[in-house]
Image (tube, rainbow, N blue to C red; front, side):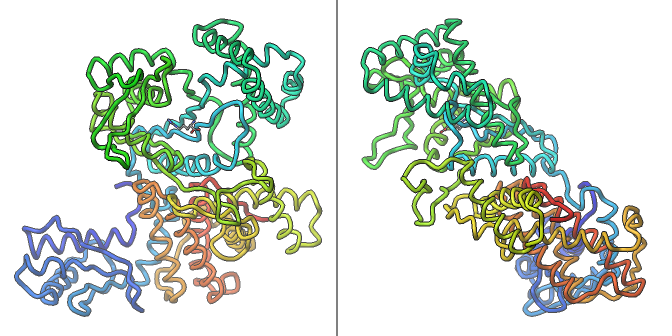
Length: 593
Ligand code: ARG
């Protein structure tokens, strides 16, 4: 284990040792440590209840023996331990142990977070958007959740590889390229050069007009199909236009990614086109292994594990009847590459829940083909839908697909109203800056704080509220702690491990705050396992509330020494833990707003 052991881990260790002494044959039993909600009790162990049978004793007797052991041999544990109820072990840390923990955490850069994911090579596939269209509401969750997971796993020691599996290949490029070649005067051609958001709006427009021509004009449709063949056979002029379209889209995406404060860069692009040459080999190999079989002119994988409502197996189409390769073939080639070339131990696909069946089928086929050994863990990190106020999938007023930038703008406008109301004298440019920061943070937090699988309503006014479990509440909680530290006489002193006085009595609010801080490493590790960022959001919200309760009942700057120093240290640790937690979610932690 790296870093500082949490108080909970210390109890776990000590109770584990005591179990080993009292009941050697069960020395590996889980000490079953839980936070306690009884007044005056910090944590409890339920081990005696589960082990009593094996010990041929009553739970209370076994608990009594464990208490004797712990009292005689406390190890590093500084706490009072007693038996309660039918055989719980109640643990209450000494005040000195609590201050000691604060000091130890302040001296640890990682604030008590270990590196349980050390060395795990993890590919995160996100947001994997289709080019030649603008980012829309459907891309919010993949970008925000994907980025948070990249940050959390990276902090836990994983070797994270971001892959933006762009949808940059396929028959739709035939019509786009053909249209551009036939309309060199199209506005798109000129606006593109100006860069900026107009370029991508123009791309959307290109998509619309090319599609319209394709549907209305059979001759154009024919030329577009020929253009697909030219693209696939590597015709240089065709490829040049294709490259332009992809590059323009990427620039436009990157502007939004940057506005969202993502880690993603253009260098993370690993589009579908990259796998084009590998597709025939992938399909041949599936056929050779008799995993893919002919079916109505196509080549499909059938697996009895995946059946439709009629009980018939649902095919995974790897080659269509027109000879083209589909999404599934590309994903199979991609898995083979991620395992073979990138040596991934774990691959996470942060994709809409509606693609669940696709991924289950692809993963199963890859396992059968031997491209995905059992040692490699692949997971579809599915998420629910962003809904409008009416509880239906989010749409613009005229029923169209809402652009991601429009959602962000709406949140920033709501934040602007809140900021202005709170501080009417603030200069407009400053209010704009803060509104942008709060609005974006609010959208990201609201998304992350909802349990991943659930749908949620996009409600900008609620997201930017100062109270409740919102990003804005957390940002302001951070500024409040930062302000106290700023006003402290000698902030430089905080940089060195402050000399805490362990003899200062700990009040109830201080105790609750220290215990909340103690849980940070466990919750971070839990998010690394469950890949559910909302657990970290819930934790930070509780931490901010514990801080508020502490601050309301314990004066800091006005307290006499040595209490003042101890409380300032607690503030410092709270600020750093909040800031680190926010950064794991991809949120800023400004000192003032
Ligand atoms: N481009 C796809 C879409 O827009 C998502 C790709 C997800 N990643 C993957 N490896 N299939 O639906």
